[in-house]
Image (cartoon, rainbow, N blue to C red; front, side, top):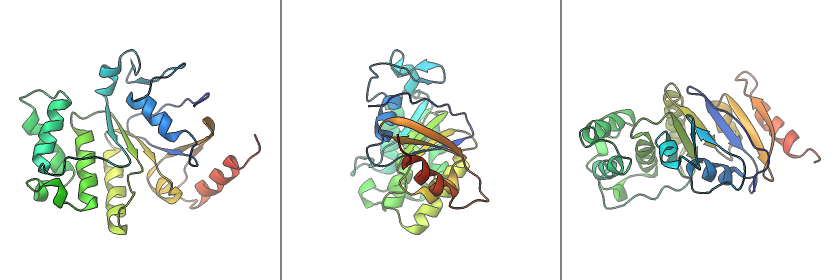
Length: 220
């Protein structure tokens, strides 16, 4: 359950959503993506209420879950074309959208391979490419570095920074140092409540961790 959680995010910003297990991060994401319906309160995406105008709101959203489930025997190109149609890209734009996201995510070398043959890093890129179909203004990345090796983590970090020029991005992670490297701002959740917000300063490494510990350990 969430109580009194509210925040805004604008295009060009990366926002870290932080909290211990059970803090309400997943509930927050499920409300934004339409998997859950709020019993009270509201959320909007580009002016569209996620409850009362769900389909319109979701057209402005690209979501990468913590464990993306991709069809393993489809090729990268086939799965992108499938999701482009599911996301209601016009028939005339499907090929162009697939070309665009393959270029953006450096997938051209593997676009004719089955997803089952891809490394974890490339599968994550495919999941992000799917989220980018239709150029939604908001991207949500739930634990995007889970299971990646150090080089893949670095590549993903650089990718998020590149994407942030054209999208608003919400990122969840249990690795505070990763959020500190890629986000401009972080909000802290605990037991379903918003405890605070912190503007990240690049010249103060480790400060996000100190702020997180101080605010989540503070007495209620």
